[in-house]
Image 1 (cartoon, helix red, strand yellow):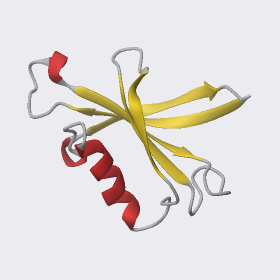
Image 2: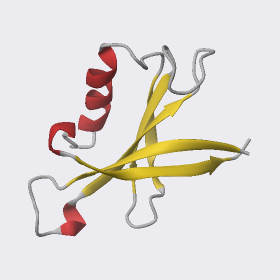
Image 3: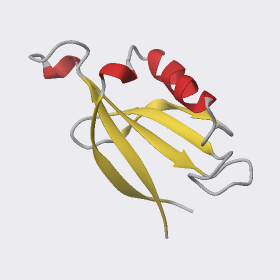
Image 4: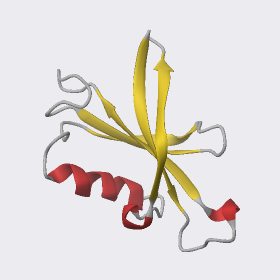
Length: 102
C-alpha cells in the first residue's frame, strides 16, 4: 500500500463570513523524474479539493522537477492563481495521509 501526504490549505478570498465562496486546496509531493517524493527534483502537485470530504476537484496541476528548487514557490503560486487562489492569504489547516492505488 502506498500513501501520500497532502498539505491542506484554505483561502477565504478576503471573505470571512461566506464559507461557500472559500477555496480549499492541497499541495502534494509526488515521485517524479526518477526521484522519490519530497526529494530534490521530484514533482509537486496542486489541486482544489471539496469541503468537507477533501476530494479532488479536477484538474490537478503538476510542477515536475521542482522540489527543493527556488522556482518551486513561484510555480506552485502560478498554478494556484489559475483558480483565483492567493497562497499568501491562505491558511494551512492540516496534513492528510491518503492511500493511492497502485
